[in-house]
Image 1 (cartoon, rainbow, N blue to C red):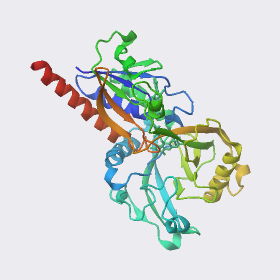
Image 2: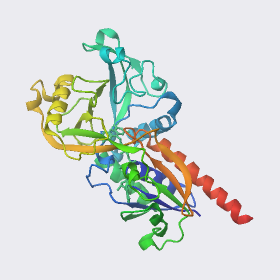
Image 3: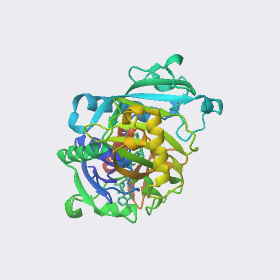
Image 4: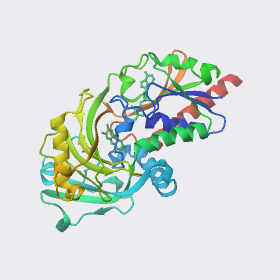
Amino acid sequence: MPNIVVVGAGVSGLTCALLLAKQKGNTVTVVAKHMPGDYDAEYTSPWAGANVLPMALAKDSRWEGRTWPELRRLAATTPEAGLHIQTARVLRRTKDVTAGLKAALSDGLFQPDPWFRELMDDFREIPAAQLPPGMHSGCEFTSVCINTAVYLPWLVGQCAKHGVTFKRAVLKHISEAKGMMGPQGKGGKVDVVVNATGLLACRLGGVMDTKVYPARGQIVLVRNEAEGFMPTTSGCEDGEDEVVYVMQRALGGGTILGGTYMKGNWDPNPDPNIAMRIMKRAVETHPELTGGKGVEGLDIIRHGVGLRPLREGGVRIEKEVIDGTWVVHNYGHAGWGYQGSYGCAERVVELVDEIAAQTRRTSKL
Ligand code: FAD
């Protein structure tokens, strides 16, 4: 006890599976439609930059607060996981501050005097004289960039090392997970199902969460290098659902240029006009990307779209009984699934422990 099936092999499902499998007595199977190595807009995790730019408001900071130390540790001690240390530079435009910072990604990230100044190493406000034109203020801190093409397979490897079984399957209903424990589903009775289905939680029978919808993120991956800085700004002139960020991935993973945050938009195809705007903004904020040669100097690896799992009311991490089986939900991480992954997975482990303790108490009666 307990036998656990985790549905989902994105960063949320894999991190949960790893932490659960590390606990003595747990047996874990991961079941997923998509696995690391697949590229599909509705499988969000491979498309992320990914870096750590805290977005929570102070009251919700547990997930990011608990995750940062682990990601920093991995970057420092475990090169094969595909993370490296980079400096994040967050710029608040005068225009956006005056308008009350309503930009797409503005939640906690662009707040002046943010809660995460205590969390992130080397946090400093940028002196006014060093700000680019049009900027009200800004800050810098030590962060990481994660090469998702390395990190997700690394998580699979870590899970396998801790005895996790993997299975490909598309579930129509969450209750189907009950028959999927271990090889060929012959691993015994399932005690707990962890639902880490991301965006597709809105279509999964037994869950059908109508509060979940996409925030479409279009990116361009290039071979050009960004020299250690990851800039992002509170807005841009190209529209409220377009954003600006640049992140160089570890281990030759290229540089991600972003992006968009288009709420309710399911289009999986890269839009060439948006791609051109993304590239123009990137070379404007980061002329050294192309040595001053402008967009023509960019060497493109791939255009892509990932759909972030946005949820009205925020992430859902809670337990409930569905068709007689305990289900622990962990989905709806929007644009912070990596930077909140360990904090959320720790909470899932707590909930599974609570269920196991309750079941033990009941069976003694
Ligand atoms: P997913 O990765 O979508 O995984 C869901 C899993 O569930 C998949 O394996 C899928 O196959 C499976 N599944 C779903 N339904 C079923 C079913 N019915 N049957 C079987 N399996 C099923 N986050 C950061 O922290 N930092 C960043 O810098 C960052 N940048 C981003 C940039 C872009 C362009 C995008 C798109 C996202 C970014 N994010 C970032 C957000 C992050 O990528 C997501 O929050 C995270 O990937 C969500 O992971 P997940 O595991 O919950 O979902």
